[in-house]
Amino acid sequence: MFKWKDAYSCNIAEIDSQHKRLFELGEKVYDIVSIKDGFDHYDEIMSSLFELQKYAIYHFDFEEKLMKNNGYEEYDSHVKKHREFFDKILELSKKDIDENQHKVSMDILVFIADWIENHILKTDTKYKNYLNSKGIY
Ligand SMILES: [Fe+2]
Ligand SMILES: [Fe+2]
View 1 (cartoon, rainbow, N blue to C red):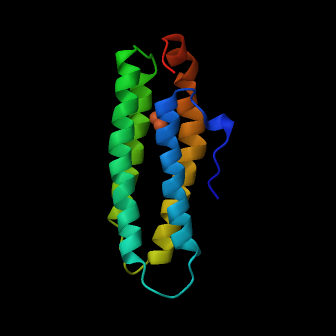
View 2 (view 1 turned 90 degrees about the vertical axis):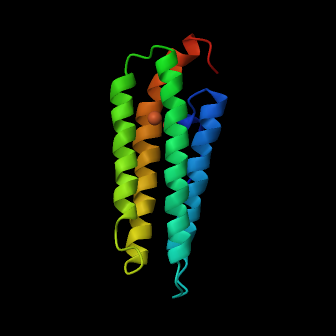
Protein backbone atom coordinates (compact mmCIF):
# COMPACT_ATOMS: atom_id res chain seq x y z
CA MET A 1 0.00 0.00 0.00
CA PHE A 2 2.79 2.44 0.89
CA LYS A 3 5.11 2.70 -2.09
CA TRP A 4 7.97 5.15 -2.18
CA LYS A 5 8.27 7.23 -5.33
CA ASP A 6 10.64 9.99 -6.41
CA ALA A 7 8.03 12.69 -5.83
CA TYR A 8 8.41 12.09 -2.08
CA SER A 9 12.13 12.78 -2.15
CA CYS A 10 13.41 15.87 -0.36
CA ASN A 11 16.78 15.36 -2.03
CA ILE A 12 18.47 15.03 1.37
CA ALA A 13 19.70 11.49 2.00
CA GLU A 14 19.09 11.31 5.76
CA ILE A 15 15.62 12.86 5.48
CA ASP A 16 14.61 10.47 2.70
CA SER A 17 15.78 7.50 4.70
CA GLN A 18 13.82 8.69 7.77
CA HIS A 19 10.74 9.22 5.61
CA LYS A 20 11.09 5.72 4.20
CA ARG A 21 10.89 4.47 7.76
CA LEU A 22 7.39 5.99 8.00
CA PHE A 23 6.40 4.00 4.92
CA GLU A 24 7.58 0.85 6.71
CA LEU A 25 5.54 1.73 9.79
CA GLY A 26 2.53 2.32 7.53
CA GLU A 27 3.05 -1.06 5.90
CA LYS A 28 3.11 -2.72 9.33
CA VAL A 29 -0.20 -1.12 10.28
CA TYR A 30 -1.62 -2.11 6.90
CA ASP A 31 -0.72 -5.73 7.71
CA ILE A 32 -2.53 -5.48 11.04
CA VAL A 33 -5.63 -4.04 9.36
CA SER A 34 -5.56 -6.75 6.70
CA ILE A 35 -5.43 -9.76 9.04
CA LYS A 36 -8.92 -11.08 9.51
CA ASP A 37 -8.12 -14.01 11.77
CA GLY A 38 -10.41 -12.94 14.58
CA PHE A 39 -7.50 -12.94 17.03
CA ASP A 40 -6.49 -10.21 19.37
CA HIS A 41 -3.98 -7.73 17.90
CA TYR A 42 -3.90 -5.27 20.76
CA ASP A 43 -0.17 -5.72 21.39
CA GLU A 44 0.75 -5.08 17.74
CA ILE A 45 -1.45 -1.98 17.61
CA MET A 46 0.07 -0.63 20.81
CA SER A 47 3.59 -1.28 19.63
CA SER A 48 2.87 0.46 16.29
CA LEU A 49 1.55 3.48 18.12
CA PHE A 50 4.56 3.51 20.39
CA GLU A 51 6.94 3.23 17.43
CA LEU A 52 5.08 6.01 15.66
CA GLN A 53 5.44 8.22 18.71
CA LYS A 54 9.17 7.52 19.02
CA TYR A 55 9.58 8.06 15.29
CA ALA A 56 7.76 11.39 15.38
CA ILE A 57 9.86 12.69 18.28
CA TYR A 58 13.11 11.73 16.58
CA HIS A 59 12.20 12.74 13.04
CA PHE A 60 10.51 16.06 13.86
CA ASP A 61 13.40 17.05 16.07
CA PHE A 62 15.90 16.21 13.33
CA GLU A 63 13.98 18.14 10.68
CA GLU A 64 13.34 21.14 12.94
CA LYS A 65 17.04 21.48 13.84
CA LEU A 66 17.99 21.32 10.19
CA MET A 67 15.47 24.04 9.28
CA LYS A 68 16.35 26.24 12.24
CA ASN A 69 20.11 25.97 11.85
CA ASN A 70 19.77 27.04 8.25
CA GLY A 71 17.39 29.92 8.77
CA TYR A 72 14.45 28.42 6.88
CA GLU A 73 11.75 31.07 6.82
CA GLU A 74 8.76 28.72 7.09
CA TYR A 75 10.19 27.14 10.24
CA ASP A 76 7.41 28.27 12.61
CA SER A 77 4.49 27.11 10.50
CA HIS A 78 6.25 23.82 9.81
CA VAL A 79 6.84 23.20 13.52
CA LYS A 80 3.17 23.95 14.18
CA LYS A 81 2.20 21.19 11.75
CA HIS A 82 4.56 18.76 13.49
CA ARG A 83 2.89 19.55 16.82
CA GLU A 84 -0.51 18.81 15.30
CA PHE A 85 0.69 15.42 14.09
CA PHE A 86 2.14 14.64 17.48
CA ASP A 87 -1.08 15.63 19.26
CA LYS A 88 -3.00 13.39 16.91
CA ILE A 89 -0.77 10.42 17.83
CA LEU A 90 -1.44 11.09 21.52
CA GLU A 91 -5.15 11.34 20.78
CA LEU A 92 -5.10 7.99 18.95
CA SER A 93 -3.26 6.44 21.90
CA LYS A 94 -6.01 7.54 24.28
CA LYS A 95 -8.83 5.76 22.45
CA ASP A 96 -10.32 2.57 23.77
CA ILE A 97 -8.04 0.51 21.58
CA ASP A 98 -8.77 -2.91 23.00
CA GLU A 99 -12.49 -2.66 22.31
CA ASN A 100 -12.10 -1.09 18.86
CA GLN A 101 -9.04 -2.75 17.40
CA HIS A 102 -10.09 -2.69 13.77
CA LYS A 103 -11.39 0.87 13.89
CA VAL A 104 -8.31 2.23 15.67
CA SER A 105 -5.88 0.46 13.33
CA MET A 106 -7.83 1.90 10.38
CA ASP A 107 -7.56 5.35 11.99
CA ILE A 108 -3.79 4.92 12.38
CA LEU A 109 -3.54 3.81 8.75
CA VAL A 110 -5.47 6.84 7.50
CA PHE A 111 -3.38 9.07 9.75
CA ILE A 112 -0.08 7.77 8.28
CA ALA A 113 -1.41 8.02 4.72
CA ASP A 114 -2.40 11.64 5.40
CA TRP A 115 1.02 12.37 6.91
CA ILE A 116 2.72 11.02 3.78
CA GLU A 117 0.41 12.62 1.22
CA ASN A 118 -0.09 15.95 2.89
CA HIS A 119 2.93 16.58 5.04
CA ILE A 120 5.84 14.85 3.30
CA LEU A 121 4.61 15.59 -0.20
CA LYS A 122 3.40 19.15 0.37
CA THR A 123 5.17 20.58 3.42
CA ASP A 124 8.48 18.73 3.68
CA THR A 125 9.29 18.92 -0.03
CA LYS A 126 8.94 22.72 0.28
CA TYR A 127 12.27 23.02 2.13
CA LYS A 128 14.04 20.89 -0.49
CA ASN A 129 15.35 23.65 -2.76
CA TYR A 130 16.15 25.96 0.12
CA LEU A 131 18.20 23.42 2.07
CA ASN A 132 19.85 22.14 -1.11
CA SER A 133 20.88 25.73 -1.86
CA LYS A 134 22.58 25.73 1.57
CA GLY A 135 24.61 22.72 0.49
CA ILE A 136 22.53 20.15 2.36
CA TYR A 137 21.92 16.94 0.44
FE1 LIG B 1 8.07 17.98 8.49
FE1 LIG C 1 9.42 14.85 7.54
